[in-house]
Image 1 (cartoon, rainbow, N blue to C red):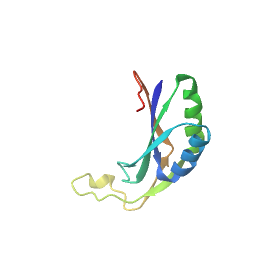
Image 2 (image 1 turned 90 degrees about the vertical axis):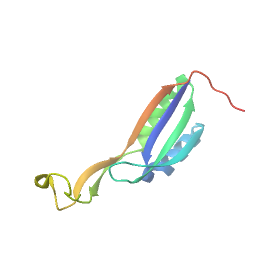
Image 3 (image 1 turned 135 degrees about the horizontal axis):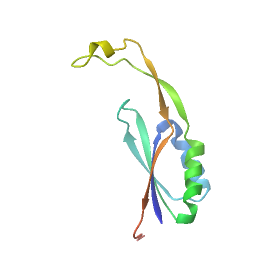
Image 4 (image 1 turned 60 degrees about the vertical axis):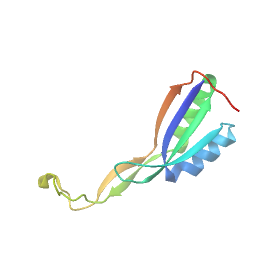
Length: 109
């Protein structure tokens, strides 16, 4: 058995949630916040049998796409002024960061 933890941009959460439930995966969703852009994310916790792991990963990959987003300029206070860009910079966001962990025991009460 495996435990999948997938951190997904909020923009992809509903599509992913529906796709996983449609394929009979049990899903727990937690609200989370990203570091760099401090943007909303959703962390999905999915328990699955080893033989369905690839199916779950394929669903996540298919429903969570990377996209470009403008990041606001960051103040050079305390930093290197030469590296300061006074205009927004396009950075890739989205997609999914996925961790797969082995499960030693599983209990449902």
